[in-house]
Length: 239
Ligand code: ATP
Image (tube, rainbow, N blue to C red; front, top):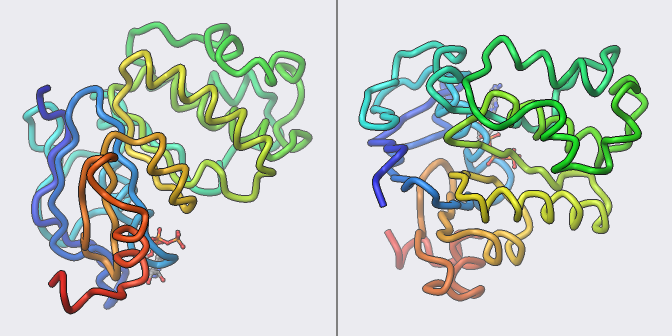
């Protein structure tokens, strides 16, 4: 499989705080990579840097073989990178359909349309003309994912899609994602739930204090290894 995304020795700061430290990783076309790690490990910052929402202090990001490190976020969307941000960030006064159409300006050609999104997320069908503010958490999350899909991305970045959702709703969201995965989408997802991350992803990358401390294919890592890396219990041993 060819490499779609390559991150090399990336450093990202929030003022004096270095949130991402010398991170290097590659994502192959069609691969699903789960980023795990405790709160504050730098996962969101890394995703935002890949999407172009946060300029790195050093290092390099390439997409489809081209350097995009200094490319503006909207140009990255045009190249095929879409971010579903933490907290969803919908327009509360716009309807579901209007929120989906907002992404049309940045649309690449491809199969995703309003109707295709409503088919992938049937729970949105009766909500099509309702304002986003009136939706449940799960419906909002589905709308946020749908909005990203409307750009017809080659790489979908998902930040904590299960956050604040009831388990049954999370199931529904992941069921829809599973269909995308079977369709060969390339996905990087941040997921707090280790068991879910390890079941859905081809590869798991664990971050701790801005660094990658463990990385391996789904079947090649045990739950114990990931848990230890997650909490930094074997930091000395793995460094
Ligand atoms: P979470 O699961 O809580 O989202 P995370 O692994 O995604 O955690 P980040 O949100 O990337 O971690 O945060 C990494 C570090 O950067 C943390 O120490 C956090 O406090 C800090 N940080 C994040 N955003 C900002 C910001 N806008 N300004 C200053 N510091 C920030």
